Length: 274
Image 1 (cartoon, rainbow, N blue to C red):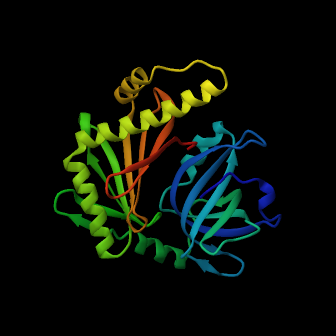
Image 2: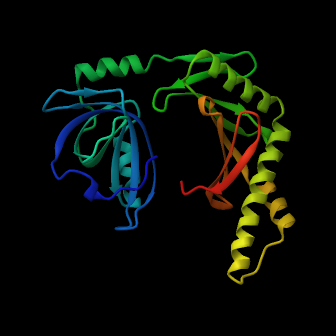
């Protein structure tokens, strides 16, 4: 959804805009053109200072292109759930569901605005979905999902989430996660085994075609299952789609994404660029 953009995709005009910051998680990747990190900041709403126009219904993203050594500085001054005034460039072609900006300068990281402050207070009121087995899922307005960390195997916790849809679909998603939780040892092995086999077979096929050496499949699977951790399960119940993330940055800097459906079937696995 959020691909790496170049500065040429943004207007040359600079505008002062106030934003409600939702998640300054600073996730992104290095761009190919200048070796900077393309960072995304998810926002709840924005207000054009010049026109007074307020947008809160789109997904709102502020991008920064910075060097890795600058990350700590920006993390200190751009806080989650705060109001900031920024000098930005609008994306040349704004979409119906997505508004993107390129950061030029931080004018005020503690900006006061009556309209946005009222919206922020409403945003901070918690909304929950309660499940009889898993407990309370907290609504994440940034991405429109209900989130909860649950206990997993080996005394670890993983993130689980499902979309904010109608009650029937939400109940379906919660039921799926409940079944996964009650059979977590079996499910942990199933997803790891599937992803390991998928990745090693594709890797060996590519290596064979190029005349290279192959890796013993069973040895790789054993190593993979012992070292990779389950990180999250994201359910998109309307689309009958489930996204699993595995990873261990001490072993492999890229995460593994596994795709499946609400019947528990798995149909794809790949190395994630993010």
